[in-house]
Length: 535
Image (cartoon, rainbow, N blue to C red):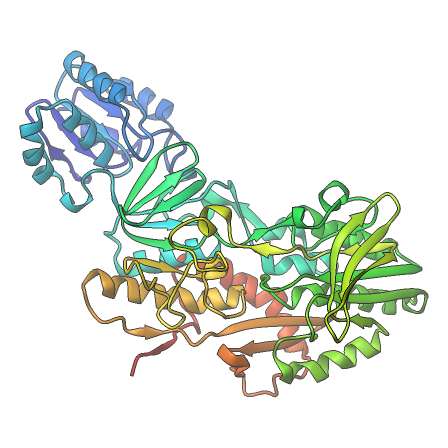
């Protein structure tokens, strides 16, 4: 047969996911009944619905039963229901799920304890017994999808699960462009099922905690998912609630943020509508993802106001909780030229703490040179807010977290120092690099190669150098491509002076990078991404 079937006894055999086309061959092989143990839509659009399979099975003279079992611990009543089906259905019977493991586990629940070891050896991949995955990836963002695709490219037989609650996947780097009228918001989103690697198992649920001593991830619905190796990449949480009054006024009263998909287009609407008045752009304390994004929003709005002749009638301020405009000093002079060009006022050590949308008043905690704090009120006509950001609560309250709440890693190998079967990448890991998609692109290969080496008890081969990139959109049509590593070391890809704004980099930002993201990075293609090996 074209599908792999494992016979467990004279009546029951098991296999992984089947297609409608497989049913003809299954019927020809003599099977009289089919049991579907995989819930509908678990694998996204690539998975045929049970109704489709049932209709075709009955057309071929087979009996079809639907007994779905979710990933994780199997309830006893499901085992009893499976026992009853085996007794009632005409044999031989073929049971299937995503990989065949749950069907096998159900069968084991119907057998005496002494027989489970024999059943264990009959499975194709006995190491996955007990519903434990080879690798569990927590997070289906750019890091989670990308690293899974890269690992499966190297080891396609591995059983990998991705825990991700969202139905949608976003290309967040383009939201700044949406806010500047240079990109369509609909082009930044796709269904999660479209980007999920086909051979990975998607656990459509939210993670609630980690039990690394027992190699388990806890889900919010109470299930526990076992793993041999774990990759932590759930991203960073936008803590809107840290700014008093903000959540109630987002999306109205002139208050917006390019850090949310549904608000980026509102930023553009506000920019177009504002002809005079005051526009405030804010940046909270670090860490935040894409540290240049707060000022990029300001530059694109100012460029539009300048092009339309309104800029002289608009007072623009950039309030940042930090002490510098940008963390890598080499790029500050070029950025300051644009600050001067747009006549924007810079306010350092100024942190947004409260918003009153109805009166269009923003409240900032400011500090003087001696560190003395005071509250300052500012009126606005447009307020672009970058929210405070922190590690997800289920990570920060777990044994995997460092003092700041992020997943503790060796910044060079991206391996957890206390739990060697745990790796992390992306915005949720503790590595002190810039939290950007470009950093993830490099980290993916480090984690993929090092995780597989660790699986074989080999020395970890790759080192992450802290590479990150921030395409600073200083005007519509030009970008400063800031590429740097640990300690602010410049790491330009092109043999051009990196601090000079260029049309070429705008083309890369708006056209090339999105294409590479969807067609390369999320599919395990590692163009211009290979890091250095250990010496």
